Length: 272
Ligand SMILES: [Zn+2]
Image (cartoon, rainbow, N blue to C red; front, side, top):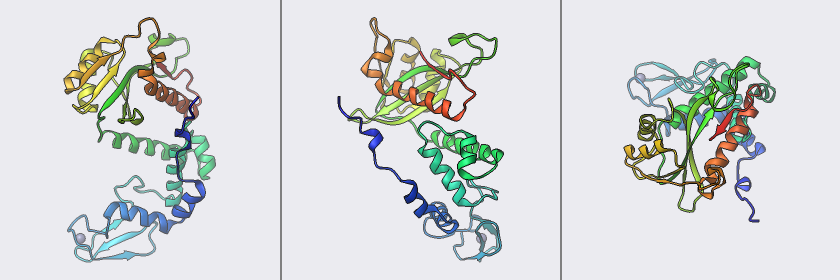
């Protein structure tokens, strides 16, 4: 059996990460570079000349032109935080590295912060990831599948009919070698032609060639100008077909991740 090379991809080790982002100054420099590239630029008047104010919780710039004071963290993910930037950067690293998900409790222990603080960090990171995700659409060959997300309520119905389950569409784009590149998971009002058409317009580029199972609503990816190919399972389950290998793998990863992040949720994802 061929070795799966994906888990062996080069990454950033924890010692290397701490060498690069272990101090407040290193994190400030990284954030400053992302915000202003070359040098500070006043958001009010565009002046680049500035003073750096001392004694503030976080690095603050004062414009030499209009004297406006701008905190390095203002308007960023770290806006108004009193937590040191290395803790935030470490949180991003830990969440990014945790393929099996990271609960707020685990984050609390690893960062050495309170549980509410860990929960807030986790919430903000998830929100930032979600907002960034909306900027992108998928391109090229795309595998899609319909799934439900959510746990069962005590005394409620089990399975697909559960009142607590949210329908969502999972889609992954593949490169020319057939390797997964980008994943999108989005809730939909239901698996109707209208809902899938709207989802496709928001999430797919017109150059997509979409592969789905035989669920008829997926033909409405044509609304986004995409091509569509339905794979009829013919006696076996769609998840057993090689055409759906990556979307099934990623739905499996999502289930593992949710179980790792939210221990109270059981039976969280049900691919159909
Ligand atoms: Zn200014």
